[in-house]
Length: 166
Image (cartoon, rainbow, N blue to C red; front, side, top):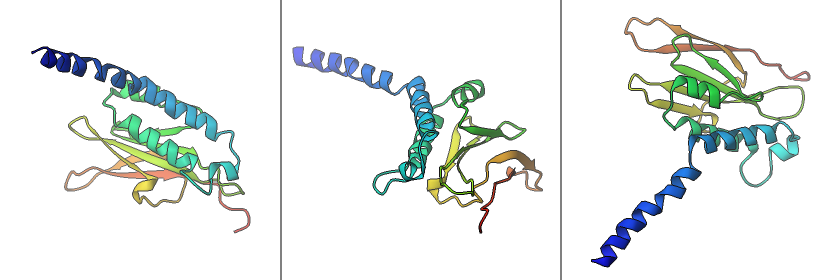
């Protein structure tokens, strides 16, 4: 009987530190620290021969943050950072996040994560590591297109500084 009470007590105590370590504030702080770090790296540091690049680490951190249910105002607040561009569709459902990839040279390319709020309030997130192919431009406008079927279709527009020697 005593062992049963200890197991229940142990189950109640163990999750508390785990939950505290994985809070929204912790996830946001991790993302901001990675963005700050990326801004100071040169090309060789941003793209190491071994291990994930800083861009992969930022993407993973942002995807983890976006997997946390939160209000739009909270999402706006926790993703506000000088090195993270954000564009939102007029209906407020689609967010495009981008950051400079530190690729070196005259071509300025950006990594992306898109986040779509569904009608159930959950989010669908797609990043560059998910096989997403684009022109590497930072998106400055998102427009919702009208369709006959009523399905949501968006057009994202952006410009990129191209290679000076290509």
